[in-house]
Amino acid sequence: MYKILKKKELAANIYLMDVEAKRVAKTCKPGQFVIVRTDAAGERIPLTICDYDREAGTVTIVFQTVGAGTKMMAELQEGEAFHDFVGPLGCASEFVGEELSAIKDKRFLFVAGGVGAAPVYPQVKWLHEHGIAADVIVGSKTKDLLILEKEMEAVAGNLYVTTDDGSYGRSGMVTQTIKDLIAEGKQYDVCIAIGPMIMMKFVCLLTKEYQLPTIVSLNPIMVDGTGMCGACRVTVDGKVKFACVDGPEFDGHAVNFDEAMRRQQIYKTQEGRAMLALQEGETHHGGCGNCAD
Image (cartoon, rainbow, N blue to C red; front, side, top):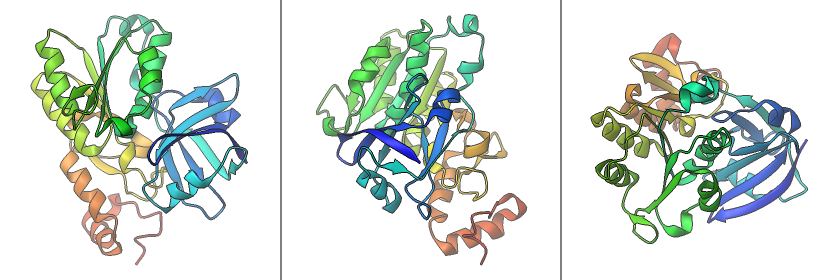
């Protein structure tokens, strides 16, 4: 069992939890994720790791209640425990494995949308701990839904907050802030964008115009988290990939976002899964049992 040591509501229906998971904390890296279950019969929920403390043996997760599984998670209190807390899974962020001398000269721009601030935070923190200051854009629909602002401010080189409705920080979408920063003379070598699929799509369309290499995390489309269900199948540079085992991070300019988002909607129904199984044949992956009929 994996005890919840801390629980905090960051915004409406968005929660942070520190979980005692020593083995995960010992080896996890920025960009990776865990799969949690509230009980033996509970839904498997993949969540990108927000933070970790190797000495304390804790892992921090942030989640938004969007369905029954996350609603059950939100009902858990400090002192209670998760039945399963499996990880670390997926591949770590690419720069973590690079030579430090090679990335110290790179100019990083991170773009976080909504709950995407949670997986962006450990990456920016890792760079900060290694003496690299990254610019960070955090976007939210409203001020009330903004999360991790103080934490991000402590590790970012420059933090730019924007809200869709202009209720706090800069006004408008994160793409407008990217345009503004570049117009102001800012130059970047790589952009890392994490958030809703539609946000990542439009960030990539923009950065492609600037010829700015961009990495995205496709955690939002993961379901099973083991490569068995096929829900997170995506086409990257014309090749079939699965976000949970091949990612979750990919070259954003090579991702077919329209296909991924369309497939995500179709996958929600039994009829849709059956159609996908027919269309995709052996590459579909139906291990979850949802498509057996």
